[in-house]
Length: 297
Image (cartoon, rainbow, N blue to C red):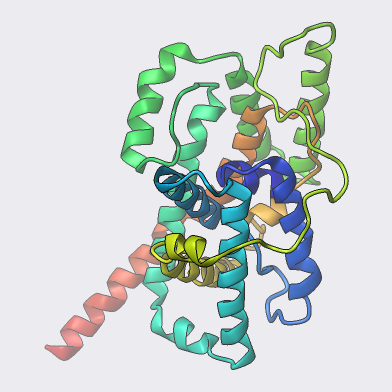
């Protein structure tokens, strides 16, 4: 799902591909959870996109990839320090389970809401804005729904209906093939598609940064670092609760030039909604709090 992460972070798609294998190739030597790699995640990608937009409002001297690479470098160095000195338990013990569940649920709702405009083919919705704003703009744009909605809605139905095999990769292949066929002989695609992804490793190089970009990043770096750690912990803990592996990485498949944006949105929505805290957990938490209250009385 590297391409999906890149779109969320407002970066060219190839950067999502780069990040998808770098984390796996390195984190395998340090990981204590087989399902989680130290790399981009959905909420983190959204925050990076917001940080890029915020910094570019102050100056246009740095490109989106330069800003993202700098965030990756510095947050990675801090995370490496925490890992080498086994300080991760301090953060994990300081975060109560309800906070983790609340964060996971809120993240799933935020990410899903940001994808609904793409699911319906609605243009002009700034998904980096607050959730209520995105929701309102999506509702306003419903009269302008495009044919993309066919790929999006049918994709969601397919993902929630097909319970066997690799439903995600089969959906991607089917939708990509259909999109290719309907684009034959057309100069402009009637639906929104991923389009060209450069081949090779053209953009891999040492990160370029200076004191000015560090100053611009300083207001965003603490929050991004906390979210990086918190989201990885929450996903790892949810794997202990969810047997069907609903994190984005477990839903990923192969992406091509003609993959519809609506299909990509459907995959993201289907992936993250599985992480929403079930009502049974909320009920058990409430019952536990009530028992503690009467015990203290």
